Length: 276
Length: 285
Image (cartoon, rainbow over all chains, first blue to last red; front, side, top):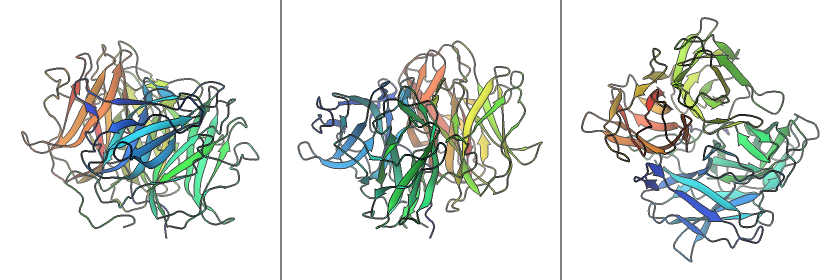
């Protein structure tokens, strides 16, 4: 059985969130708690009612989240449902991110099904008190050719606003040992969003990091997504060089792992996966 | 087919969702992927091909292009075309797309705001090269090229179909300027009749040789259908222009579609400032 996906390119976006008065898509801003890592930031409504079924959210930052010499670990939490009874839908990492001219580097894609009429809200939690996360949320139209479900988030650590810290490689530019992200996936996964940060680091170096995602039991892991390359920067940010969401074919009950190489020992990685 | 249900694909909608895993080709020795640099010739003249990959390690179904050079400058027409070629020297053109008027943060850890996925199949063992031409002579064009593994569940073609590029101006097709701010303009024909069925499009937006852009938004629709019956298949692609003649996108400008052969392919846009205009090249597979 192949573990690669049958899919290629995102479908079109829904018209939700379009501001025809300014020829733009509306930015939303949420502010994390005044207490680092606390999950009591205010929920901000992104969409009161989806106009059609959606197969995922494309999130483009519009304000940088990195700060030099600072741990900017930040989680974006996405909820669905009516006010006061929102239900957590997915969590992704959005700290340590750079933007150019008001637009994020490679946008974060969160795969997963959202039914028409769903209300969507977001909030942030962060190592930085009152961290502001600004961005544009675009919903990808569902075509029902891919049987996506509600997503599962793997690897989140709300107490640190990080994901799973990957095992540091023993040598420069050599992949480190595999780190377990999920001992056993709860259901089959056909798409996976890969989000990562700097593992709480505050002394990064401008060089490269290359991440593999794998599956399989120890010590028989196999890479299924190889060399997701990102440049790093001494101001504590990552800038991916391509997509950070991929089609996969992972059965339920699968162990998921990740590893990385780095060109400088100052750079580290924590990682969260969202599978649907 | 893995992961697919038997529910019919909606008209104009894609069968596809996400890229497949990248091939190991062009993985560098410094935990990176190699940056390939070429130089344009005289104005609107192709520069020499530069080899990207001497021999693909496996079949590929698309190339991710992440620019690593700035092809924009204030008050300057930076229209630039990127050409992918395959085969030995005297390469055969595989695809041509517009890459001028881009946004890029130079320096260490440099980042580009967006990436393109050029859809199309390239067989294992193929040599791949790149060249560029521009309104600006001897412009440096650099990028990371990542080849996506072919899983053969999508019938991409070799080569893909390049639509709308104009080597005389290094531009694509200039879209009809809207008559009013923040109102979609008239549809502009990109292809009167598509030469094949398409399941994926890559869109190369540039500034229509503009030299007086403004930091405001643009919303682009892609549609299909005969005149006066056009139907939007990709709505409101959000772009942001700025006064340095840069255009950045809030999403990957490559989309899955479901367009039959013989379709009339069109585009239109709205803008918040009359200083901003668009031209468009398309690569389809």
